[in-house]
Length: 249
Image (cartoon, rainbow, N blue to C red; front, side, top):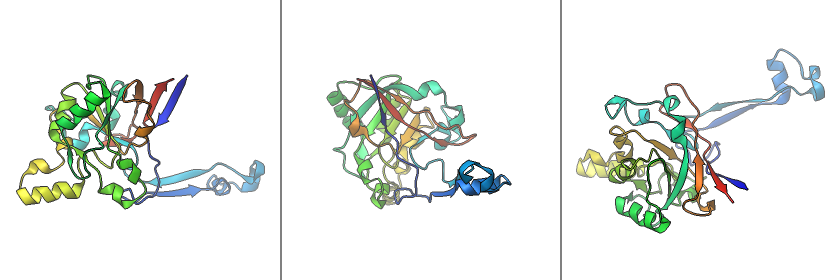
């Protein structure tokens, strides 16, 4: 048998989104009038419904493409989300448990090594690495925006230089919370504090999955596949993704 584990949050208005989400439904009855007809013209006086949704490409569970990090990656024009090879978006999943890293702090290489040892699997080429911080427990509250750990630049390089193309996290972003990064930059004047995981993508291309959830529902750290195909928004730096773990039982 095959079991599917949904690793995606719902797209909805919530204090956990940094930008507003609006969903305007068109009812079955009003759908008739949009078509220039009346409800009575349809069986049961109902036509077809629709919704108008206003959101950003970084709303909900989504994939960041290299273009989001900068206009170039590895000296070449950075790929937009509609240019991402589908082959990158399906592969063996690896959960690295980094819940011991406190919110606001960096997930460093040593944390990845410790988590890989616990998983008995060091990430390798083609793996889709999912960072389990536990921050998804805050989904639905404003704290989700500010209380999570983030991947350091060195730790990002550690994964990507081993052939990992996709790195996911069950938090608002892959880097540390914005306020913490900006605070450290202003205190030190060191620009390396600003979005180091994202900026690394200018050196070597890779993809980020942000706002994952439900990693605790996976039966083990390995032994499953991940499908994370993005919606191909033309020329965009990100696109929504329905991220699913596929577990053979």
